[in-house]
Length: 390
Image (cartoon, rainbow, N blue to C red; front, side):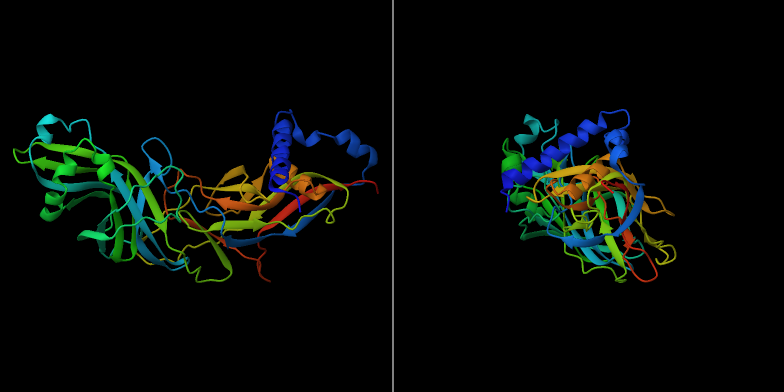
């Protein structure tokens, strides 16, 4: 079997070819003189593709003020279509510019969290019971994913609130304030304190705290109040049981599992052929009428497709497409055609494709993709090719 370095170089070579073709005025015409001299008539073949959850890359759900995800998602929901799933939101804070010498020399008397809840998914008619835990360890939000494990054992407080957009105010207990008085006034606050973990024990919704306009506020005895802005977030996800309808594949933002897509193409499939055009089509189910009154379900904006090499590490983002209410997801690009052409020649290093949600989403929204049944066509690749040497 080829070594990892050979597989990687093969896949990187494919990427180089794709970029070379992308620089042409019309990549579809590359090599057409050769094709026309020894080819038959163009043909169209439809290949059934398969979707499955895998142990590939979980969604990237960590972020800072500079990059990455911009919400901490927390809660639990039993979705009528997607089934039950839950999120734990982790957030950390840093001293603001108003944390001055006057604040640091006087004991802290009061502290609270003021959090910008700007996203709600689920039943808005039931209150959420939120348990706030203190995080026990330092953690990095950069490139952190939904399957990250964060230790948080100490329960700080429990609050109940209605899941609707707006500012949430959580007063921190006097005991917590007294225990963290020195930390709050210390120059090494960022090293001593690691943030909070939000976990919901009752309710049927998931909320999202935005990095913007969220902070920990602390007051000293004379009434000097300062802010510790929210600096980084992470959302970790439980494994979902799967959709209620086995004919659907749920592609959800913030998921701990990767969505692998396999197109059964190999050197024996088309023989010697030139692939001119490839369309990957995924039919999305219409979920209108399946949700009760009061269940808030925002929609995804985009879904992305990437190619994964046989080393399971090298990845190439191929294309992102918009999600529409009444149409399929349709991926078509010169890059996709070139990847499948190289796979058909047996020298691409391609293992599979993955579907993903762009980092800009920071939600738990999903699309329900139809699996192949006698009544419905499932995921499929529509390939236009010209046989050679016939």
